[in-house]
Amino acid sequence: MPQDTDQGPDREMFELAVAAMDKAYAPYSNFQVGAVVRSASGALYAGCNVENAAYPQGCCAEASAISAMVAAGERRITEVAVIGRGEHLVTPCGGCRQRIREFADDATPIHVCGPEGPRRSLTLGELLPLSFGPGHLDTTTKE
Ligand code: THU
Image (cartoon, rainbow, N blue to C red; front, side):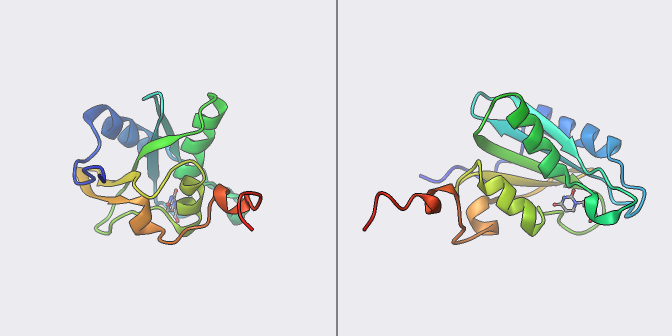
């Protein structure tokens, strides 16, 4: 059974995402993003985008949140929240979809939020169909 992905983040997750967004260092794009991942233990890890004068060295919010989770010793993402301002849905960029994929699966909900609250929930499988993941590297089980 797929999870009920229409259900947005809980209040704690949403508020952590807002707080991370508000702390984002984005002087070049002026576009602050916050992200929160929930791990298998239920713990929440927040991150924000951190830009750099050498533009390509900037880091996405999702990447920061995932780093915090891994640094805490966790390896499984069960839920993601991303938040940004503006009228458009701030879905994870292509690279971050793949970063999330490393630690999540097709059914993992990704809650896209705006400052006013949750806007839409999608699954990773919807955002990154037919994805490549760690299992693809295991060629010993077949042939
Ligand atoms: N950004 C994120 O942090 N996450 C995304 O998924 C989309 C884009 C950041 C990168 C850059 O600092 C700013 O938003 C504008 O692209």
